[in-house]
Image (cartoon, rainbow, N blue to C red):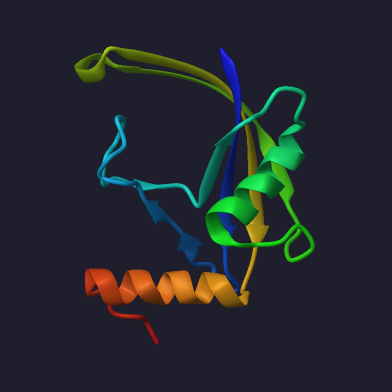
Length: 119
């Protein structure tokens, strides 16, 4: 059992930011995933791990959004194709963010995947 945080990032239009996992990932390559997910470092709190993950993965600074704890959950997943059993105690957070770099990321996804932006 290990500790993790998941963060879902919404914008003011109630759109959810998803990230596509790298093709090099052992689990779920090229799959869409949450806005941000991190494993906690030794001695790190859940909220600090969430802030760290938002900064490292999305470039969102700790003063740029207000994290809301949605609650804890226990997750047990098995991936027999790669011989992995994953047991996580997860703190789930949500935030609202309309800032600069995120807009660039979203536009990059639209352009790369040929998606059309809704009006």
